[in-house]
Image (cartoon, rainbow, N blue to C red; front, side, top):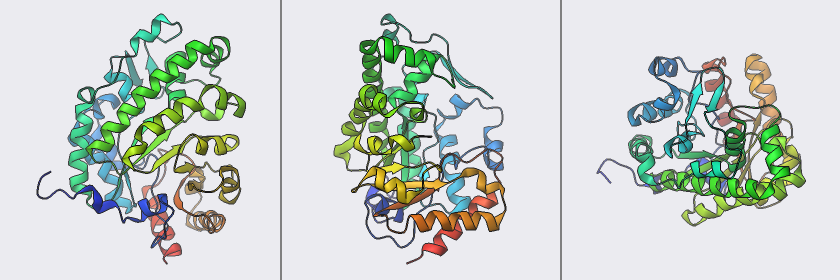
Length: 351
């Protein structure tokens, strides 16, 4: 560790990590999913002409992009700039992120023989991640860095469908029709995901978030039977590091209790379920993260403040609350609206 690098303990007393641990905070901490990205003109400038996956593999560029919203918005945590398919690309899966489409997989996984595509991930496969996080933690000082990965179900959905899907018919057909193959696929993805999170934590990430973006497509009984064990394996694998583990999905109101049960310390809630109801579903012993509807940011300052007060009001009795949107920042969001929102939450909740 170089002389000017802050040891990881510098982030320990941050409002964000205290909220994750359900300890008293000086103010409700705020960060936004997709806070680093297309809503920022400075992001669009540095990304110009650089394909998405390539931008995730350049440590200096990753560092700059990750820091942009911290500088601009004064958020309480940075989130590592990457993509959920990065570890799959790193182990040799033939995929690309196509503009306007999303991740597209050349040879979808449909049979047992196809599982051979999924080898173990080693730290050497993602040495650029270790390098970028080293650069970042040196710059961030007392501001925590959140590492992240895609959850096994969401990664499996992309791999089996071959790209984004609204119905997940191929993935669900495997889940229902060949449960053994499905279980083996998710188990292998759990190992790859856990390895990817370990690299980030060992490099200096102060917390990690598992994005199960598409888990909302599942009924609770299917989540419990066919998905939960793989997510639980990921959380268990990083438990000994002692960093907060956040679990987030979209449209997962019916799954909130199970997502907490899978092993998260913090459960992310989208905008469909009020936080006082979410805490009832999740049960005691977990912090919650969320949950302003991202579209409210298009409605003008007065409306944003009114809806933010509603969120803060429903969160007032929570053991721990991290303020966030109920999903990612939309690309056409005015960055100044986000800056004002951070300031408003900090001011309203100053203790």
